[in-house]
Length: 544
Image 1 (cartoon, rainbow, N blue to C red):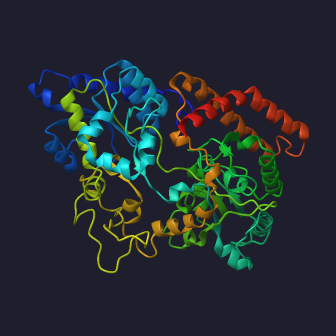
Image 2: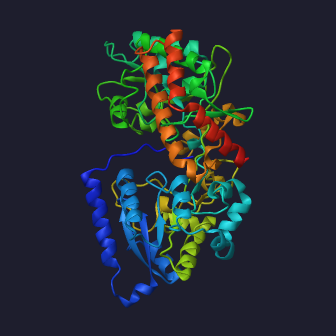
Image 3: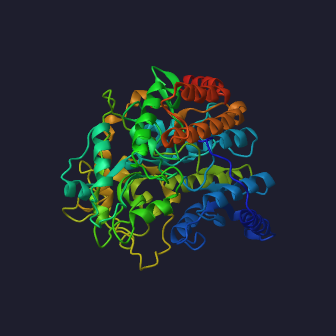
C-alpha cells in the first residue's frame, strides 16, 4: 500500500516550476480550432526525450487521430509530485496523466479520493470495450487486475506491471570475495561466521595498504542496513526505503515485526557488530552519493560488504581495477535459532501511472485507452519502450540466449553508448505497462552481463522468501475514509521504528536492558500501533 509516503516540504524552486507549468497549461487552452483534436497529457519526461517530437509519440498521434499537447515534468520526484498536485488542486488539469512509478504516480489513496470526487474516471468500461490487450493481460495475470482494482470494484487508474525478478529481493548483501580469498576465508553462512569475517576484514588489512582504513560493513538511508540481518532472526519484509513497513502475516494475523522479541534479538546482534567497530557509523545517515564515494575510493578499496539491491549502488561497475567484480551476493545467513529468510517485495508498485480525468470527452477517453492498450503486446511494447528495430533493438542472433535460459529470446537491446546522444524514438519507462516475466526475462543478455549476474544473485534469495508471511500491501486497500488516519499512523510508526532501531544498534538505547525495550514497546502503543493493526487487519481480511 503506497499511502506510506512521507510528506515533503514545498520549496521555492518546486513552486516556481509548478506555477510555470500551470501557466503553460492555461496558455495551451486557446481558441485554436484544432483544439478539438488535441489530447492534453501530463507526463514525466526523461532528460534525453522530447515527447513532442518523439517518433513513437508521432505514431500514437497518427493511430489515435489526436495531437498530444504535452505538459511535462522532470524525473525529479519532488518536483513531479508537487506539479501534479498543484494542477489537480487548481482545477486546470489535463485530460490524461502518464507517469513513471519511481518518479511519481497516483497512490491508492489518491485514486480513491479523486475517483470519489469525480476528478478521475473509472476505466472498467473503457478497458472492456476498447482495450482487448489489457483485458488479455488481466486474464493471464489476475494479480495485475487485482493490483489495479479498488475495493469499490472500480479501476481508477492503471498501474504498470513490472516483473523485475531482481527487484523482488531488495535486501541483498554483497561481500568482497577478493578480500575473502586474500585472507583465506570462506563465504560465511551463519551470523556467527559473518561476525568473524567482518572482524578479519577490520583487523587483517585485506586491501594491503598498511592502514586500518577498511570499512567492514556499510549501507545508506535508501538501501537499509537492517533487513538482511533481521531475516536471520525473523522475517523482515523491508527491502529498501521504498518499502519501509515491517508488517507481516502470522497465520493470517497482521503483525508488526519490529515489535517482536526476535526483532530485539536481531538488533542485539547488530549492536554487537557495531560495538566491535564493524559497522560504518554513517550507515544509518549517509545517502547513496556518500556510499558510492566509499566504494569508489581511488587510493584503495575500502568496503568489505554492503547491503543494497545491486552492487552498482555502492561501487561503479566496469572499473579499470576490476574491484566491482569482487562483490558477490551473499545468500541469506542462518541465525542462531536456524532462521533463514529473504525479504520479498512485489516489483510492481500499487497505485496508477495512467489515469483519465473528467476533462476528457468520450472520444478522448477512447483514444487514450487505445494508446495504452497498443503498448501491451510484446512486439509493440518493444517499439514503445526501446525504439526502432535496427537502431535501438535487434532480433536475437543464432546462439544468443535469454536472461532466463528456459525462455526463447525475442529481442536484443545493446547497452547505451555514453558517448552517443540517444535517438528520440521511444518512451522508455513511460511504456512499461506489460513488462511481464516473459518480456523482461526473454531479452538477450550476454553471458557475463550485469543483468545476468543480478538474475543469478536473486536466485540465491528466492527459496528463502516465506510467501505465507508476506503481507500483500499491493492488494490491500484501506477504505478512503480511513486513509488519512492510516497515513499519519504509518508515518509515525515507521519513523519511530527506524529511529529506535538505529538507536538500539548504535548504543543510544540499550537493547539488552529490559526497561529500554519495554519503553520502546510502550512508545509503539502510544503512537497508535493497536489502531493501525486493527485497520490493516480489516483491510487485509476484505482483500482475501
